[in-house]
Figure 1: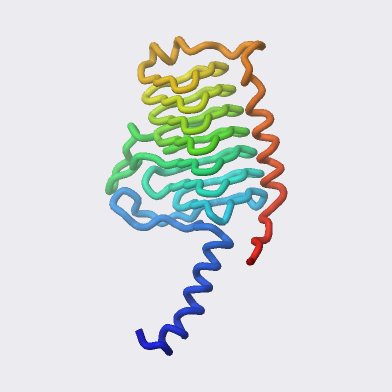
Figure 2: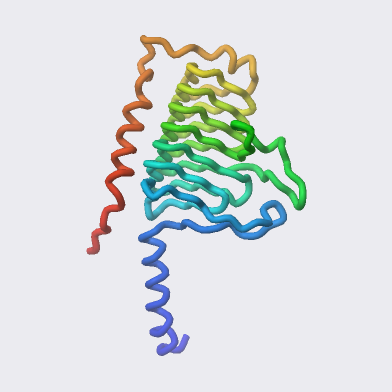
Amino acid sequence: MNRSIFISISPILNLLVLGIALTGWVAPNVTTTFNPTVTEPVIALSARVHPMAVVNGSVTIGELIFVAPGASIRGDEGQHIFVGDQSNVQDGVVIHGLETFEGDHELPENEVQVEGRSYSVYIGKRVSLAHQSQVHGPAKVGDDTFVGMQALVFRTELGDHVVVEPGAKLIGVKVAPGRYVPALALITTQKQADALPFITAGYPYRKLNEGVVGVNIQLAKAGQPKQITR
């Protein structure tokens, strides 16, 4: 490349990289047969999206939400993705969904219904999605629920006040409110889901989510720290 051309282009590239580093990748979806409408994410002013997180397409992020480094919330295939107030999306978490449209027709089998509205993924209020967990639509996570590290929730609906312990996998089931899923469990039938244990006063992780939510609300309120240059 001609040196003078490189010099003129280099500052532009530097600005682009700096812009990504400071704001993360928050962008509309691209046009496809399964998502022909270009939609921008809607993010509450009180939410904090880390510069190394990705949020794109048909996504709504509520109040006082912290989206941590490496998290990916992609509303570019399944639509719509909703994350309720005071929830948190921790490091390496993926929220995505199967296509909910193809051409001119809807695919209801790839959606969940909440209060008469259709979603690819619906995350309630005060939900914690811990490090490297995945919620893949169609999926719903109820209020005050904890999804543990490296857990998977796919084609599944979790009730309110549920605890999914680390490494558990749930596919194609509905979990009633107030249950917990043991670590590393594989739940693929409704019979297994219905047999999950209740959260009792003696359950050691009964109040885990409250503390995690409190920590992450503080991280959201603190705002974006200034990056140190070395």
